Structure formats: structure tokens, C-alpha cells
Image 1 (spheres, rainbow, N blue to C red):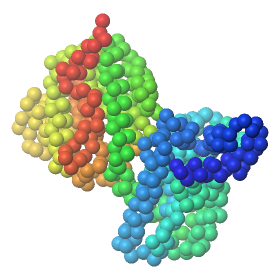
Image 2 (cartoon, rainbow, N blue to C red; image 1 turned 180 degrees about the vertical axis):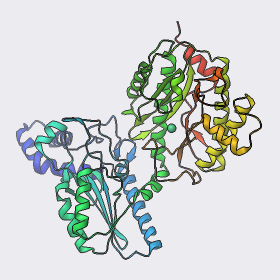
Image 3 (cartoon, rainbow, N blue to C red; image 1 turned 180 degrees about the horizontal axis):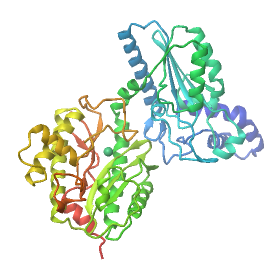
Image 4 (cartoon, rainbow, N blue to C red; image 1 turned 135 degrees about the horizontal axis):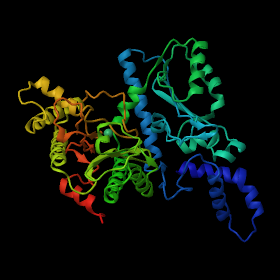
Length: 506
Ligand SMILES: [Mn+2]
């Protein structure tokens, strides 16, 4: 922050300040004028909120809400250390390492109508920069490294339409990088970098391009400069992102709190005859009203047998008296996602069959969460869910009793055809490069989401259960002292759920 302030002061006095001061009457003190200039200059200068322009969002020292500038520096340091240790293994330590991380670019819905912009999370994690069409290059030679941020040029016309850009001049102070250049200089920079480091290792994820123009350019430049292959750095990014910092855990907790409350409110307003679409609108409204930027994904709002469609997002049916609602919804709060599922009877009372299934799912979910203190892998957790679900389903005659373990697992899978857990963080399915076969560790956040869906086509099922679908999903922080349920403010006990669902009934 101090660096930003210094920068603004310098700019204000040199470029704007003189004019402004000259125009002001002598009655106003110079410091007031500079402060006004700072505010004015800042307001029209940076491409994202700062503590000066948005004190309700950012505290002094923060680059994005909840995260200090310093944390971004240490993330880049960590990245460099990981790349170097990788190179030790590959014995390529003497070669210059060049890491390229592009930002997302704007995506259009139709002519000139953009979708809501969402930053590439790998880029956001290492820069804190929220602007479209930028890129970070980190160059490591020997033990030293340089970070160069490419940003959009300041441009009066574009800024009139789309709002301010930070620009290359202000970017080093704002983002704490060593240097910044306009993106138009990328090609020149890249060519001279490659020419100076002929045997460099180029880290770039060419399999999942996030900025089409830059990707094309990189592929062409790669050919011109005789680059034989890019190495994907994504797995290394994700290894670092997998373990959350204290600041990230705080943001995740808040994201989970907002979504928990929104789902509680939505259970409360639901009643027979409600449209799934209205429940969607309500959860969206409650999340935004409490500070979330948007929902983290299109929510599943499934009344009755729609719950059998795992990714049901059409959400356009009326929920009938006697049906349950399965809602899978979460929000994104300052870049961090929550992911919750609750199932409730729309009329406030579970039928006997609904209650039996709900009980099983809840019991299994609680056992699985407790299991996390032993630090299992997510795949082990899934295997355990299948065994637990299978045995309980045998007890209520939804799976034959004489099944061997293999057959039991397969039968359980026919009732729950999805995995029980995924990593959670900036993305809903966070750190996708990390396999589910690694043991969980303190600082990781995962979901625990067993379910039972009784499809009419399921050959083991009996008709009184047809069409029922139950899932309960919580977000859990792994800690040495045992798992912490971040979504604990969203009730899941039968009595609590029934009470909430009854609450606004006439
Ligand atoms: Mn999930």
C-alpha cells in the first residue's frame, strides 16, 4: 500500500497535481489538494478496486479483498522454488526457466454483449490482477527471478466504454511485480527472451488455452523461435493452490456462511406449488445481498424426481405437495467458492420413505466427515461411502442381502453414480490436476457429498422409493485437530430441516 501511495503521490504531483493545484485557490491547503488528486486520479486509474476507491471492500495493504499484496509475492516465490526443485530432479537447473500465465479474455454472449467476466484462477492466484487480456511471465535464471506483467494499454476510448485500466506504468506498484509492459509488447519481449536463452524451458499450458489470441501468438512464436515443446506448469500451480492460507480459509468460511444462510432462507420460503425457478432466484438474491459476487455455478434446484438427474439445471418445474427439493448451490465470495447441497420436504414433513433414505445419507455423511481425521484419500472416502451405503440399503431391502462385496459396491454405485468428494477453493472443482488418490492434508478444503437416487430403471429398487433423490453436501477444512465443517450454519438434522421447511407455511 505504501508503494501505491508513493506512486500516486508522485504521479499526482507530477502529472495531475500541478494542474489541479494551480487551479485551486490558496485557501485550500496543499495536502488537501493532493489528497483530492489522489482520490480523483486513483478513481479513474486502476482497473480494479483499491483500498482508496473501495474502502468497504479492501483494507489497507490488501491487493484483493482479504488478501495482502505480500501474500501474492510469497505465492510467486513458492512457485519459483517448486519449479527449481523440479529442475533439480530433471537436472536442468542451469537452463533458464520461463513461466507464462495468461489471464482470461473477455467472452461474448452475442455481438458486443459480454458474459460476466471471470478471471483465470491460476493467473489471479499469482498476480491478484482482475483485468482481462493480461499475462504474467516469470523468468528464472540461476537462483534469481523476474516477474513481468503484461497489461492492457491505457486507452481513452476503451476506458470510456469499459472502465479504467491500470496500465503498464502503474502496474508494478499496484501488483508488486518487478516490471510491467503493455500486452502489445509481448511478442517483442518473448522473441528477445528466447534469443537470449536458447536452451530455456518454457512452462505454458498449451492444452487448455484461456486467452485465444495470446495462445495463437505463442504457438506461432514457438515455431519461429524453434521451441520444441511447452511444459505444462498446471500441476505445480495446483499443488500450491491445494493448501489454503489463513487468509484464504477466512474467505472460504465467509463464502460458506453466505451460502448456508441463503439456503436456510430458501428452505423457509419454499412451499408446495413453488416454482424451482423461484427457489433459484431466492438463493441467488440472498447470496448477492450478503456480499457474494454471484453464484459459484448454475444451481441444481430439483423438485421430486428431477433429483434423479444429477446435473439438473433447467429448474423450470413446479414442486408438488409431498415432493422433496434437492438444492445444490454455492456462491463466489471475493474469488472463493462454496458448494452446498440440502434436501428437504417442500411441505415440511418427510414421508416415511423419504425419511428412511434421508436418515441413511445423513448417517453416512457424518461417518465420512469423521473419517477425515485419519487423512484418507478422496478415493478411499468414496470406496467407504459405497460400502456404507450398500450395507444400509441392504437393511431396507433395496439391495439383495446375499451380495458379495464386489456386487455390493456395484449396486451401491447404481444408487449413487457420482464421486463423494472434490477439492474446493477458488474454483468449485478446484485444483483439477490433483488426483483423488492423494491423502488429504491440513489446509485442504474438500466437499463430502453422499447421495441416494432411486431411478425407476434401477433393478434393485422397489416402487415406493421410485423417483426419490437425496444428497447432503458440506464443505470441510482438513485440520490436524480434526475436520472443521465450514458449512455448519446450514442445518441438516431431520428435525431442523422440517422446522425450517414448515416455518412460513400458512
Ligand atoms: Mn460439490
